[in-house]
Image (cartoon, rainbow, N blue to C red; front, side, top):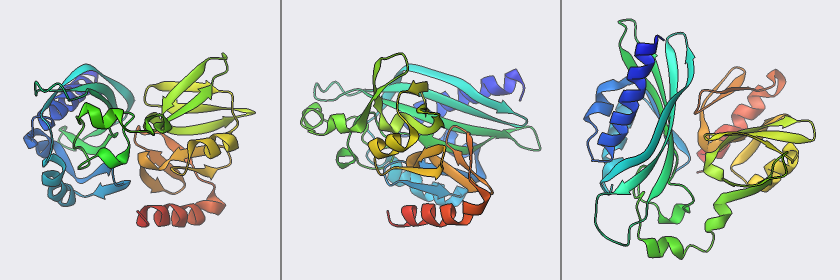
Length: 267
């Protein structure tokens, strides 16, 4: 894409999110393509197809607490041919003056593509659950990012949503699990790919999977993926919500496909 197109994609991404958190989905509906998909982080599922997403949207906004986006940053993560990927992070600040509301961080991925007529179309959106909160306190998929502070403080397992990792510079990292896309083996160490950047960790890939928990699975002896950020499985790779394509061994493709299908079907 040209720089003008990628700049427009960034502007539209921000505008769609800002309107969404005002319970206005008109701009979103204007740009979604027929094969648009949406990652439902709460239910660990993917909603595929324009009509299915349109049916889901009233549920998604039904309990939203109107909020503004602050401390926001949106950048182009990938620009190839007629498609680009915008990633962003921001803080949701409640408009309500109530003292018992807390500010929550979110991360997003928007995949845009130019149509044959040269118009931008939205192909996929992935939005993480508000940072560090357990599933039990959530409403709908994009919903309830702001919750009573007392409830948040009383969550005994808040810290369980973060991994404690030592990196190769001997620094201790506290990484939100929903920030991790995948990890790849690097000899006795591994590289952890997060929305916020790449971390060189002093841990091997097998130990990483064991420590990360059940939402992370090996698709290859060198790659472990976060199930919450898968958008597509195709021969012979898995596509993550930031556009990364991770290889699946040809001989194990059907096995991996069946395993992933079962994992999502059991949710």
